[in-house]
Length: 141
Image (cartoon, rainbow, N blue to C red):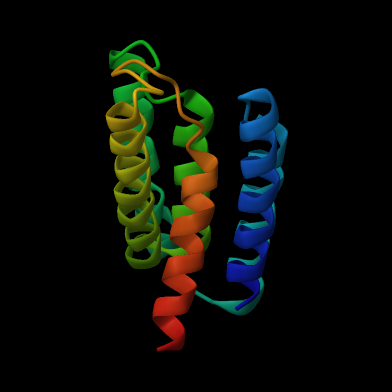
């Protein structure tokens, strides 16, 4: 529960800065990773390997970001990595899947309405926040 609250707060901050400045601050991600590690050590003995596995999708996104010249921004990749590290692989993948689904629908709407093109930049952190909210609602049901 504490990891979910921590991750939600970080996603809220990152969504705000991503919308306003098109930037995700790496120091916010660093604090998130440190706090998540501390919470894992305090509350979940032996969960470090599961947390590290949760970071793998973000590491993969970092590689994609590097190979594509930041089609996916480094900040987005680090955010995906820190969320997965905090919440674990399963929850992190649900959030990521929901975020990709939401951003895809948003992009489709922009293209169909004529307000966007294939290369239009879209801030991703708000969709990660939406994915986390959907994942939280899914847990409640």
